[in-house]
Figure 1 (cartoon, rainbow, N blue to C red):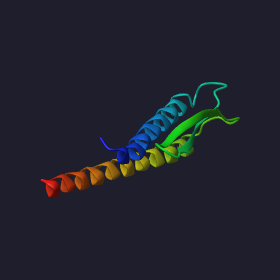
Figure 2: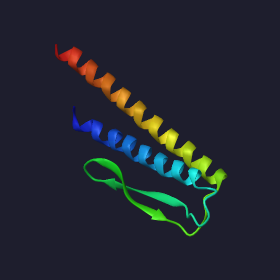
Figure 3: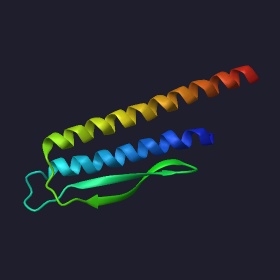
Length: 99
């Protein structure tokens, strides 16, 4: 696998972890004293992106905000999958040319 796949693969991993954190927030909406957690995403010069930390906020989670987060995570995941698919197609075309 080429290094060009590192960025979208790291994006998939970051989106999946962010989705897990959002799901945990939704599961704890009715838990007394639970405070919302947020995934902090950072970029890496060599390998794309990663979740650099998970921060606990001072507010309780709300369903509307969590639904927006779920949508953002889904779109991020889908975009990274499309990048991987496009790169795979280009790599296949390149290999066909070389043969």
